[in-house]
Amino acid sequence: AQSVTQLGSHVSVSEGALVLLRCNYSSSVPPYLFWYVQYPNQGLQLLLKYTSAATLVKGINGFEAEFKKSETSFHLTKPSAHMSDAAEYFCAVSDGGSARQLTFGSGTQLTVLP
Amino acid sequence: DSGVTQTPKHLITATGQRVTLRCSPRSGDLSVYWYQQSLDQGLQFLIHYYNGEERAKGNILERFSAQQFPDLHSELNLSSLELGDSALYFCASSAFPGASYNEQFFGPGTRLTVL
Image (cartoon, rainbow over all chains, first blue to last red):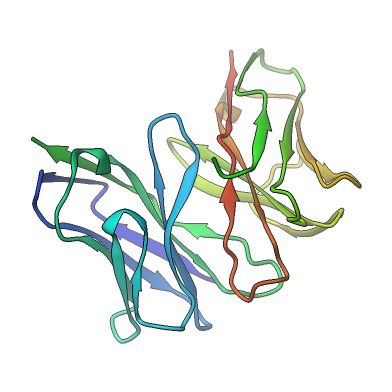
């Protein structure tokens, strides 16, 4: 079975500050990892994905994440927060097996302060 | 715009009733996934269909069922509705099994309110 833990249900940063959203996973097989963003009253949009090609993954809107197998982590970062980054962020894992459904973390609400 | 469409956007109904949620996947995608998002349970996988056949079930109640039609659109049927079924229901599609990873594209969701 696989699972995802997101540390911190709410994170607040000042505009221009570093964004760090934490995600730890548990998987019995090499995982595929994803970060999705959900803006209010909208669906989920893929930010980036890890598929074993490279441990540092760059996504849209200036976000990136680093896969660290030894720490079973896939933390999301952005060097400089923008007001438009305020949203809920979800980390998800897939085992890549025949079903391939996503198992999501509980989400982190990011607030960007002016 | 992900290319995945869901109707209706909002649905308000009463306990004990039955509703049908509809999803049209992105053009060319053969897989459809249904997820439920609620405050207490978070985002949970319900069921996966691939090219008309059920492939996997998650935390889906027996009162819920789904199907995928020959034109690849999918419907999620919820019956004997309870207050606790109020949630946002998402449909996602992917090109599985074309890719070795499962990149899913999500629709805007249907917000179900059971009164």
